[in-house]
Amino acid sequence: MKNILFVASEGVPFIKTGGLADVVGSLPKEIDKQYYDVRVIIPKYRCMKQEMTDKLEYVTNFYMDFHWKREYVGIFKAVVDGITYYFIDNEFYFNGDRPYGDDVVFEIERYTYFSKAALSILPVIDFRPDIIHCHDWQTGLIPVYLKERFQGNEFYRGIKSIMTIHNLKFQGKWDIETVKDITGLPDYYFTPDKLGFYKDGNLLKGGLVYADAITTVSDTYAEEIKMPFYGEGLDGLLRARAGDLRGIVNGIDYTDFNPETDKHLEHPYNQVNFRKEKIKNKTALQKELGLAVDEKRMMIGIVSRLTDQKGFDLIAYVMDEFCHDAVQIVVLGTGEDQYENMFRHFAWKYHEMVSANIYYSDALSHKIYAASDAFLMPSLFEPCGLSQLMALRYGTIPIVRQTGGLKDTVEPYNRFESRGTGFGFLNYNAHEMLGTIREAEALYYDNKREWNKMVDRAMKVDFSWRVSAQKYQEMYMWLCP
Image (cartoon, rainbow, N blue to C red; front, side, top):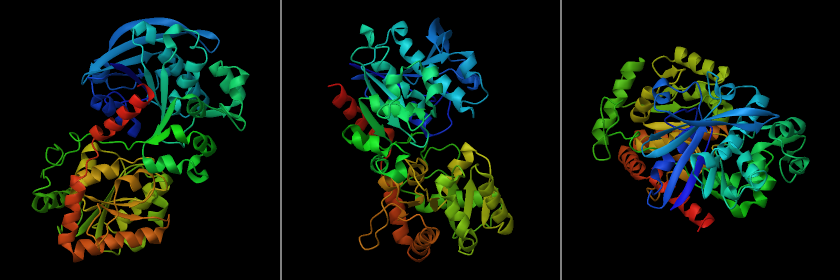
């Protein structure tokens, strides 16, 4: 039996801001309990929902040297779905009304504290991991500390570490002197081959230098980040560590996302009856959102953060042209003002064709996945992406730019061989995107039989966590035979 410890800044069902929480919440449940004891450490945020806070039981507390003072470390635990979670409690660091703040220096300080505390509690909770699986920059110091101050202690010797990059854009960096002061690491660690990053200290870079293995959330993204355009200044390091870097696509929870049992749907459906039943969800949503009720009209869904990364500058460029097509466009999400206002404007201008829902609702997102015929995701870069996996599960055809996880999970339609699960375009270009959307429209309107065959193929592909977990287990075995 091998012990695996996940350390992360968020995890479902306790706290979630993005896809990272889904990985931390779902992956441990799917790893084979016969061979692995997987546990999780996350911060005890005050902003967790009360019903989740009520599940926590107090374990103990102690004081730890941190940033020139003695700092309180409280330990709580909870067992959910057979997985043991530990929580690090410190009111000064985790007392905000949301998980992440805007003060970069404070963020670096509190996740440095969290990384050191996560290592320090291990002998206290009597759990010695064979592998510590670290997620994103917030835990980047764990591989560094393991090789530095914790090496003197017999308990920690031989523990391996893995660093998973969920989004390379976020690195935890600030000027070297400040980072040196907060972390307590000596000058030796701040050279360009370690945590030094131009004039800054970089926490994620530390993790990537010192971890025994590196993963990211799709094969294509693992290749892309070795190139300057996607590498965010770390492409040289990632090329140097190419032998230890692998991509493993995220999964989604197939019980949560199941059109046959989804409690948010008025008309559940499956792979056998979708031809008759899926369309009923469309007319129900058209009524709910005040769109023209027309079951034959192609509906295109968008559920996303409204930011540049997600390709909304492309959509903005051709939106007026797009609205002259025989489609309905349903948008759900919040983000940058310019995109929120753009969708509001077009929903006002073409009110029977465009529905702009500038907020977030879990229930509405499920209805959009079920009701739409196609799902648009023209990202500039996308480490993995989960929305396209949900769309496939619901038989809603993804139209994506072929980058990162989108390229790995959506097979572009090939009309000569009648293959594919979606539509893809290569260049980050608005009219190339629009041309691809129109290719999808043509198939939808002119060859319904072929369209339905594609829906059938989309619903057959398996992107459940079971598949991803198998690949993570292979990596654990490779690291700790």
